[in-house]
Structures are given as C-alpha cells and as structure tokens.
Image 1: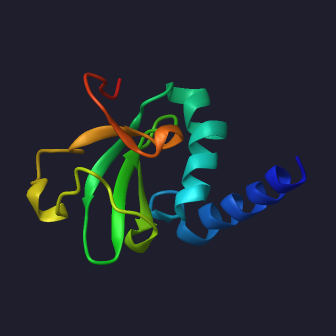
Image 2: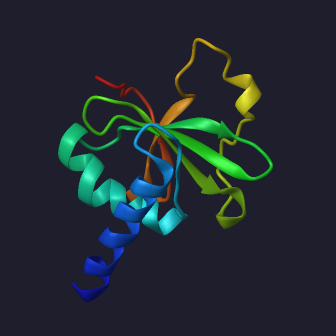
Amino acid sequence: MKFRKSVFPVLLGLLVLNGCGGPWIMDKYELQIWYRDELSRYSGAGKLGYRGSDDVYHYFIARPVDDFVIIQVPRNEWVLKDERGTSELGREGMYFYLVDPQRLFCKIDGVAFQ
C-alpha cells in the first residue's frame, strides 16, 4: 500500500506538468498501474490502443472519460511483438490494435473503443 500511495502524486504531477490535453509520458510500470487503477475503472479492460513507435517512444491512446489522451512510453523499456511505425497509421486511424498492459501489452483482437 505504501508504494501505491506514492505513485498517485507522481501521476498527478504528470497530469499537471503535461496538461490535460497534451501527451502523457509514463514508464511501462506507471502505465500498468494507471491502467489497473484508473482506466479500467472508467472504460473497462482492453481500452488502450497502440498507435505506433518511433526512435524514442511507443505511443498509446486511451479514453478515460470524455477526452482521448496520448500516452508515450520510452521505447528502450521493451520491444512489442507487433511493432509498427507511427507514419503507417495515417490520418484516419486512431490506433493499430488494442493492448492489455496487465498481460505484458499483448494484442487484444475484436475489442474497440465505445
């Protein structure tokens, strides 16, 4: 419990520093905690979309309540099995596929944002 309480001020600080509309930068572990404790409460499991990767970050999209947020995770933390470039997404697409952070960011098929 002590560690969990110390993570929330860090996440709150990220929100304040990055602004509510801008990208959120988290490490892999912070994203897993945020997903478990916050995102799954509002929009159910499997609502984190993978948007691609560049040389520095993996990009994800989520919709906690009413607005979408872009989340950036340093690419050097892990390699995704189905990694794609951000330029492949195009203007029409929101994400390539959904992932489950609680299962090592495994791809989830057949689930969409609601």
